[in-house]
Amino acid sequence: EAGVAQSPRYKIIEKRQSVAFWCNPISGHATLYWYQQILGQGPKLLIQFQNNGVVDDSQLPKDRFSAERLKGVDSTLKIQPAKLEDSAVYLCASSLDRTGIYGYTFGSGTRLTVV
Amino acid sequence: AQRVTQPEKLLSVFKGAPVELKCNYSYSGSPELFWYVQYSRQRLQLLLRHISRESIKGFTADLNKGETSFHLKKPFAQEEDSAMYYCALSGYGNEKLTFGTGTRLTIIP
Image (cartoon, each protein chain N blue to C red):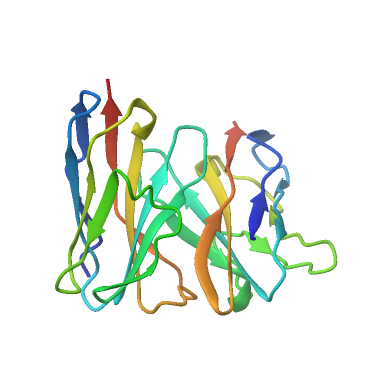
């Protein structure tokens, strides 16, 4: 089966610019997650979707971050405007169901550098 | 609130020696514990889940609810075990997966 696809792999932007990341989960996986991983830290959940609905976005900085999964398949995460502290790897993951008990499948991530 | 603590950022072990990566957690409900691994230039991937009580690549982990620990163990380290290891926690009815800060394991030939 195809894995979780993410693009772009790398992105360098100046602070106050906008950026968008794209994720396509494994076919049939209803649950999609966006994680932020800052250097030296573990991944931190930003938002969890179940089909096209948001399950948890409690740690998403909503003043600058937004995400959507309009048709319940692929998803886009946007940052507008970016800050220096947003420099991180943004990981997308999917799971078969919302419990995640069978484990998550992660994409290769997008490394964002804000200068 | 749920929290995962991995006290060792770095761990170096000689090839053939036993390995133990420590993980402690804090969670008020019934926990589900996982170990994820990231090899060099590869994606983060699931290594094992406590619920399945399996041994993967020679690694095992036992959930100790009394000590709130889920340490990862392997009796004889191999060079290919060098990687970044993350302990992760979710809970029944609270599916958010919380990761620890990770331990970088280096196997010395």
